[in-house]
Image (cartoon, rainbow over all chains, first blue to last red; front, side, top):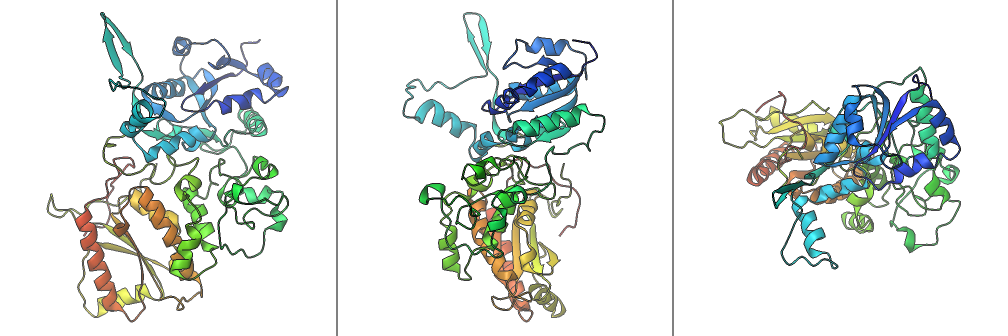
Length: 329
Length: 159
């Protein structure tokens, strides 16, 4: 190990751990990564503590890959700390890019979530109605827990972000390319999403079977039909997010005979991925009659959860409007 | 981040004046609004009209962006079905409207805040009726409470 190697950190916030898997999924290529950089912080795999990061000089980490959305006060503190210690901060994966699956919690608030988890779930018995408290004193000792915010935020809604790596999780190939780009001398413009700026349809293996004009008369869910393996999934009546989703993943879901669910986020010309796929699908509805349009569109049982599966916090409205969620988080 | 937003009308403090963003098509509804103007019809001054070539040009992003920037209501005006200058544009709008309304409801935005109207170039009076009616309904609902989630309120046209 030479001291001149660039330093890299990995950290996770509100996420499932899938993004960490991507790093491991680099397989043999991880040896090249380890040879090229010095990993200075990676709580999932290596024994470093927060104090180790605090002891580092500011901007001494070349690049931090942070995955996960920001949900608690502790995650916010870590995001700020790593921002301060890093030259480049990379939002890694859907959750830190746009809010991801945890971002769907923005359809609720802290009170509703706590009630569901600590009171109403079938396996919970909580007669004393005890909820997590940020502070607890007992016998002269004080314990503390991070505060749970009302609203889940994407990383760039908390700190400045230099680059984004999309995907749930990003594929090893996307990560490899991103690492090469960031370690190279020619850095892309700040704010760039490190994946091709085209829609997934463009690299879809079924591209040629997409009909010139599509007319939707019913939307089906994957369990409703035997999905044909060669034909465009939209043409089979499935809600495929491909037209509104960034390419680069090489369509593993389509190869697995399942529609795209949109984890790549929008391309650079689109701000709100959900609105864009809504626009695309509804334009294709094959009717001019109010009642029939409603009938066809009602075959999409959960448009919000379908169109904003990975991007509710990063969308224009960010969260459901409800009382009890006042304040910035 | 985003910083092109609508200001609060500085009318008498404490009185809520709804801010409504209207997208009118060039061929029918905008001409109807023109007609209302040249006919000296009076209607509530709470609407900022944005002229587009066709109601079909209204990307659902425009509607969400308007709400996120502080609009209390969004109105889309297009040609009557069958009368679209581009044949099919208003049908696309109609279909988008149906689903967008559902999504907005799930996001906690009341139905009265988002409205689609077919108004032909001859129906200046209809512009007046629709705008007055919508302003009153939105006034009754009160301001859209975005919970401070979107950073708001720069300077702009005011009532």
